[in-house]
Length: 142
Image (cartoon, rainbow, N blue to C red; front, side, top):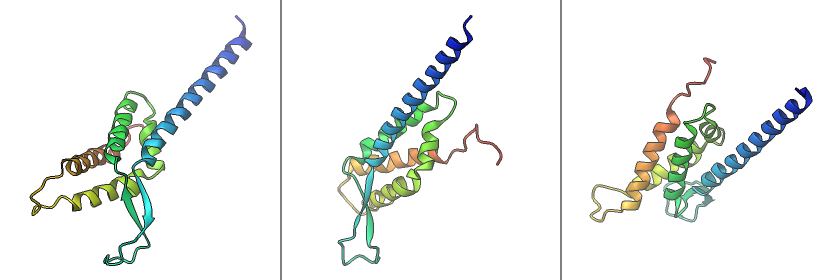
């Protein structure tokens, strides 16, 4: 048995896995980047003096669904990489909570017209709250 060949194959295999993980990370990051962004506040009548406001993307529901799907696919693995990345990028605080708050404010009980997309967006945010606030089983006590 050639030990050098086995070491080469193992290194090549590790490199291939690392490359696939990097590609997958970029796909997840792309979905997160498509949720929305900060834009200059143009509403002079607003009660806040914020210079920048969060604006959800028009298709943020599709991106929220993609993120949920990536989390579900990742649950089958050992590392929970997607949850780690979402935590590292602070997606819950920076995107999902603002999307929830902004969208929920548009769904008021006194409105007679129902906005099904807004309701679906709020519900998807709630589903992601559940995923993103679970403790990770592989996490140490530290």
